[in-house]
Structure formats: C-alpha cells, structure tokens
Length: 212
Image (cartoon, rainbow, N blue to C red; front, side, top):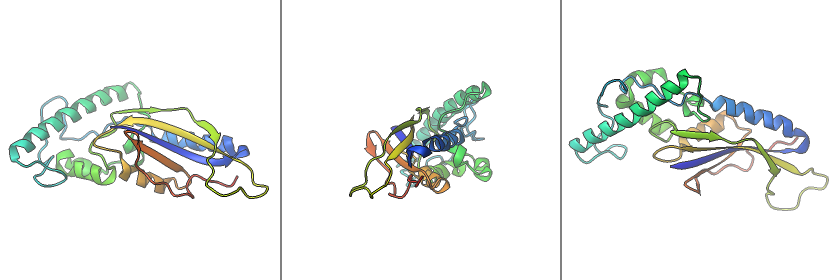
C-alpha cells in the first residue's frame, strides 16, 4: 500500500527557522536500518514460522494447510527483506522512515520471534505486520497556513505552514497505531496521513500550532 505522512507546524514568519530545525530533528529520529531482525526469520536457511497465522485469529486461515502455506510465504518475504536491509545497514544506509526508531520492538518480544508473538505485537503497536518496505523523505516546505474559519483577530500575524512529507510502502495498511504513539511523543507537531490517496488520520485542531 502506498502511503504518505506529513508532519507540520503552523508558525509566524519569525519562527520559521526554529520550526524547520524541529522538523529536521524529528526526521533524524525516524531514520534507521528498516528491519526487525527476528531470530526465527533466518535468510540463510528456511525456517518455518510456527504460529505466524493462527486459525481464526487476526484474519487467520481457515485450514491448517493454508496456514502452513501462508507461514512459508511470510517467511520468504521477511527473510528477503531482512537480508536486503542488513546488507544496506552494513554499508551505512538508513531508511528515511523506520517504524522501530521511535516505537522499538521490546527485547522480550524479539526473543519470542515473529511467529511466537512478534506479529501480534506489530499489529497492536504499529498497525502493520512488517516494517516499511520503501520510504522517501521530502525537503521541508513552507507555504501559507490554511485558515480554520472565521476572521483573523485584529493585529494577528499570518501563519506559515512548515511541513515535511514522507512517502512509503507498507502492508497491510497505514501504520495508524504507530502514529498514535508518535503523536504522544511529539504533541507539538500536527500530522496528516493518506493511504492509497485517502485520509486515514484525524488530527486535533490544536496540534501543530504555536503562537510565535
């Protein structure tokens, strides 16, 4: 699924440089290798993910044989991603948006493995079952901030929207559970998000606005 995420601040013109720095710091905090190195997903040998899909749970399969096939498919997909990102990380590459950078998988969950509870943790805390497979961060942009109805107060200064956007691919949908946690970590920032061209997150009016 093709997704986009925009973090923004509405500020006065004098505060634009500080807002740009704040968004760049937020962007740097989101960078990472882009993998979760599960112990039961070994690219060097075929290891079946036991209990990756349980019957009747989390959209599970209707039969045991189907669950085995899906487990094998998930293993191949994850193993390819882990190996690719491991090689890239060894060369110093960092993905522009790594969900584990701000919402890391706890060590206790890692030790359980993807098939031992890791998939369920990702769905509950990220809202997706695998890391982002592609991510690109855009340059910070400035534009007039949208008006929120009514006439501006007398003497108030016009606001500038300072925004940074990421485009990325992830399955099965937008990582909304991840974004809810990020919003708690960065309450000053406003966020807008889309999945396949449709808005997926409601942002409170107060978010992303500062007085100066």
